[in-house]
Length: 215
Image 1 (cartoon, rainbow, N blue to C red):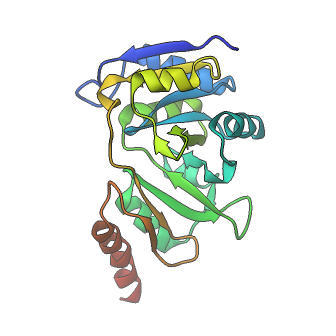
Image 2 (image 1 turned 135 degrees about the vertical axis):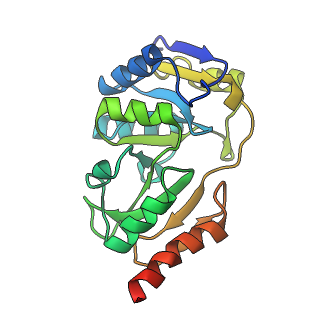
Image 3 (image 1 turned 180 degrees about the vertical axis):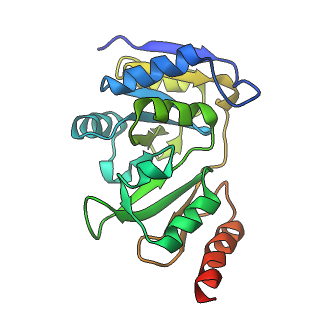
């Protein structure tokens, strides 16, 4: 059993950031190939480098396959490392991100196999991804039966001794609405899950691009 460092803060600063000493430490941990538990926007997940070793490690810990992992980016330049998108998709993502929306797009590495990507809205997460300098992977923390884990004691019980760092923000240790999930990998919009972002808003922003394209 490995030694797990546990970092707990009560809440984010008013500007949505955390102390730079903590964000730098988390980024360094991830850069070194370690796994960090942290809230991604408001849902806790395991975060690590997008490498074969990290994907295999998280799959073993989390109990589900890596095809369910979400890639996290902090810029559209990083998106080029993950996905191949056309102008319509690019414009739609510019309208909807950063935000609590996971989007399946065409995989840059495996043609015909969609990849899910999100650009978190929380500033401190964007800073961590920026500091690492490359896309990261995120796997949601779930109890048996696929229920998300929110409570501090449950998170520590489930992952202490299995990963390097647990970062908890107490204001997020309560149930939150899951992010919305859509698929635009085939050139059409498919709303897979309506969560934090309404289907109506998603459709209006997507078909705004369709209207522009027709004109």
